[in-house]
Length: 211
Image (cartoon, rainbow, N blue to C red; front, side, top):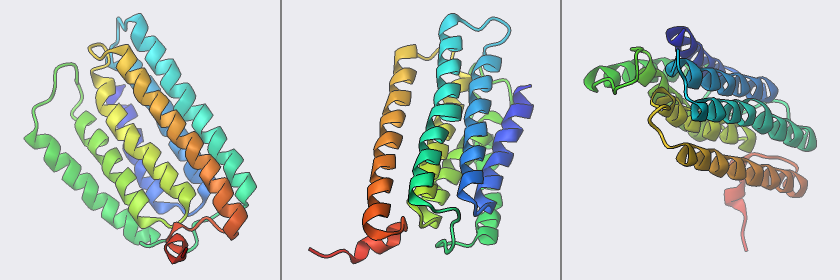
């Protein structure tokens, strides 16, 4: 089960790199969050402690429901549907993503598998999510896609921690989720004001602002 969920996480990253539709990207990021919630449970199966259940439910609720709702709400306000002219094209982004996936697997072979991680896909999936998030932040112009990139990057960090959820302090993981929630909420407000004042949400044009 862990292998299947981790492969789905990897495929969702590739789909994010290849898509120009902002709404579709938000949905894929939401599904990724739900998959990570399931991974938190399956990693500790067959006897997940109560704190693991709490962490999984909170993570799936925030990543799969709350954050996508905030992003869709912002998307309706700014009335932008697609990433039109990214810094790096979608086909090239997908090609770079495949290279990053190979790098993730190469790095995983050089690292010992931590205790509690019973799948060889765990470290590559976590690294690949982190690298995918960084690529989305760098390669896309619209602030919405950059927020999605930030979410995917954090998903990579969370994916690695999910494997050791039974050993991780619950308050620490909850604190990370709270920081992420605040960051997405603040970014949503910023997106609304950018779109209202400049009629677009392309961050590259912000460099032309002068006092």
